[in-house]
Length: 354
Image (tube, rainbow, N blue to C red):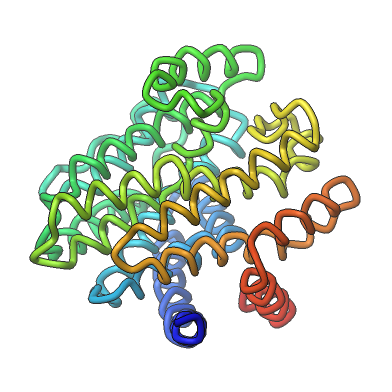
């Protein structure tokens, strides 16, 4: 049984690198060409930057195009477009020296509209000082709508993915505000949710809302015309808050030093000590693995979790002196197969494939 599991993992990773990566690159090149039509340089620059520097977000998300029974081509087009919206808007809120809550909220309507086929795109730049993107954001939204309209069971997952998109939008709106007000805004927004998730801290819940993986896996499930509501619920509970939370906590873990220098909000920095940080992230690994084991295709989801550990902890930032010891401990918590995948990710980084 273990050998079969390892074999399926090797096949998945091989297809991921050999088939998905080239398709993702092709899609990103298409959107990079579209960004050239932006009439305002700041928008073009942020579009180019989000694609060039955050390509691995789209690469990682497209692992769900390999979910058993899914439409690979359809899902890659959707995931790349949706993740490109996410990364582009993150840049607009974070890198353009703007701190306007109303503008951020309006921009992120694109995240919801993209999940609702037939919805007319809004004026996303209405309150933003730069507006002339040559139709870039609107075309990304329409691309997502087009791909989702082909999913036979979209209606089964739409309520949940829209809920997660709204949570994501709230997070992005508040976390990019001035450092003088963002913490109170975040606390006021999150605290009511902790009645449902009492095991989490404010910042751990915030981390879970920052992942798009839950949206991607539910869209992969929606390719099944016989999808049951029970499967939707079980996958939703596994991904939110556990796998989604682990995803973003790892992201913030490796960015901790960088965010401290730039003054960016970092959820991991709220842990009282390195020991607490290690214990909580290890707990998220354990909860994620346990939740994945109860799903229909447990090997697929466990491979995704190991992949998250390997991808983020193979980043050069994870070897910084301040977190190097914890990096080793977290990899140990992931198990021997996560370590093997970590080595593979290091090879991909050396060849610039990741």
